[in-house]
Image 1 (tube, rainbow, N blue to C red):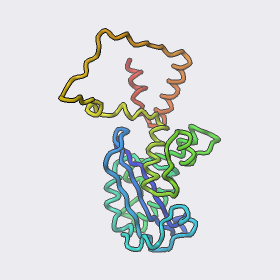
Image 2: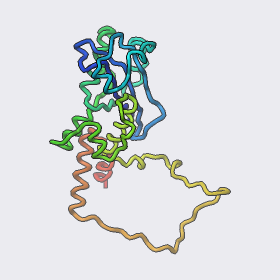
Image 3: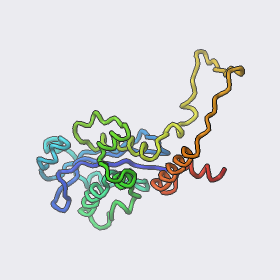
Image 4: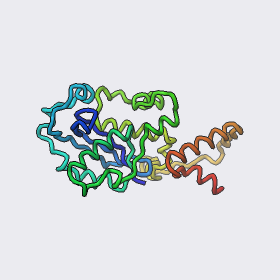
Length: 239
């Protein structure tokens, strides 16, 4: 299961008014684990950045003057996100801008939706926390995700933060997917750590019926948000 956490920064708010993408940041995730493969690119928008947008991301026209234009990197970008599930917060904004860029390249490029499936974490958050603030900063506070480095918006930084928020929203527990080799405790001189057979038995505390019901409801939420990929729920059904 390959997922891409994506964010963009732009010259303004509306592609219909000629605003363009100036930064794309993508973080690759496989089986709920971040890989070493990111995609990050600054772009020359061939137009000025609005003052309001600059106050948000701090990226100036001077910084972008020698950067490539979107047409130069379009194929590399598409190759990176192709056949993945794109995870985006407030997806219509980023998707709208990317589709506007693709449209300028020609109809043969199609739309972003032609290349991958798109999941909007803002829609997820509104369903999970109706009536509450569901901005990325608000979700960081709710799920205790560290965003202290986020003085200004940045596409790659925001994608990395969104990854932590998404994992927390969909159940966390990334350690369950770590390879066994990551869990080996290597002892000096190749020694082996043996368990004392005479140690006291572990205390087992059975969950209450209310706790089991809450657990079941949580799994069903994960099942819905992951579109049928809650492995814990399917393991229970097989038992």
